[in-house]
Length: 241
Image (cartoon, rainbow, N blue to C red; front, side, top):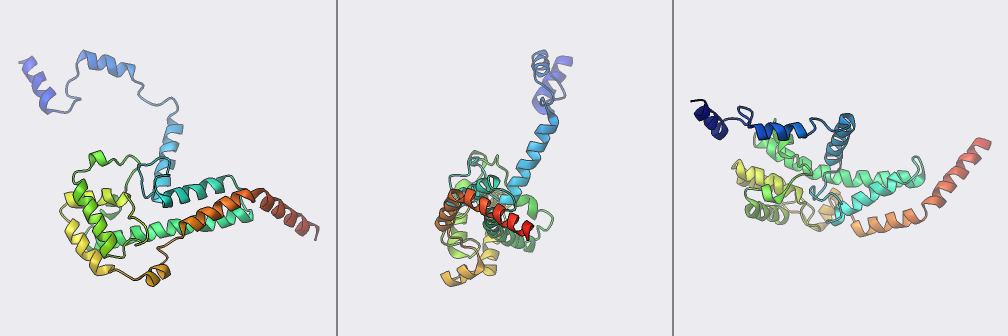
């Protein structure tokens, strides 16, 4: 009786219902917590904050180099980190960084508006959250999601028409297909955000000249020391006056 019950638990119940001696021994070998739990927790919180702030177009790319827009934003962030806070170069970099973040937030807000209109007021933020651990292998309907993403890109103004659509929304569409609301979402998107011509898109702020931005960052890195020296000189002059 006891062995039969154990077998039943092993097949149908939670793994905590029964544990073999080998599993117990293996568990004892594994540390229950990281060596520095506080450091681990802070790192995870910072990672989540970074993901939500930057809204990486390819969230599964830790190098942020696969797409031009991710590479541009990452380069800006790295350049600002090496620039003295308060300097002219730092302020310029901050303006460019916030411009790129605003563009990404604008796209996300459009998706949130449609989801809320479909009745997902409480679930919209969760549906739009894509972590760095997102993997194509875990998608249920990858081909259908990619086809829908391309349709949204070509038949609505939800994305910039001059750049490929962000990969992060592929994972979101996969969720919507699973919830059987993807077609409804597409219909609302076409209605709320119909295609626009290039001039209207330029006015909306959805388009950023990435080559120009990267060239400016490289030039700024080259003269960063000179600008900081100039800022110090200006500060000394103001102190004397």
